[in-house]
Image (cartoon, rainbow, N blue to C red; front, side, top):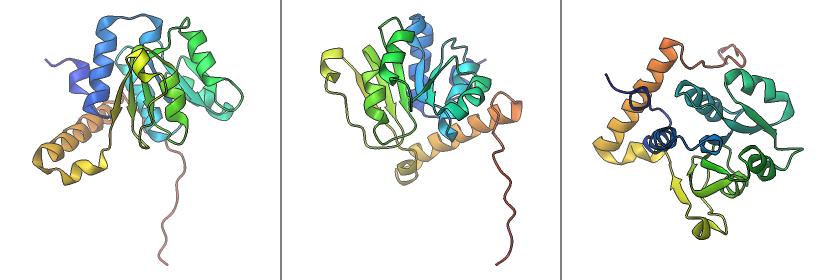
Length: 191
């Protein structure tokens, strides 16, 4: 039987591999992911990290979404409006930083995520164009720019990967391992 981490990849192959790597290394409290959490991708990332058995999941959001993200599995929630995000991540990780950061928000959060990384940390950028931190080379950081959309234009291999990821994610939802939030029902009417 395939391992759960191999069987259930939905964000990207690279993100799954980074989670597997950090989980296997058992790098301690600073080895868990850090991400913006209250959006769709961030919410799913929290649930998958919890499903994979990660014990420390650090996320950012506004104060109004904190309890929701804790219900999803976040262990540390940082209010990006009122707290020093990088300072809090360093405090939580005993000044080490996180080994994996996932930017699901864009804008300037790529810099916050990069500045929160540990030595030889990894960052996955899903939203914007990646702008590495100033000290990226001094810390031996690894950056991954991922875009699911262009996968539709790069032939059968890319298409097969997207279909496989979609099926794996659907299976997680069908089994109840990942919940899709019902935010609002909007009636469709003919115009």
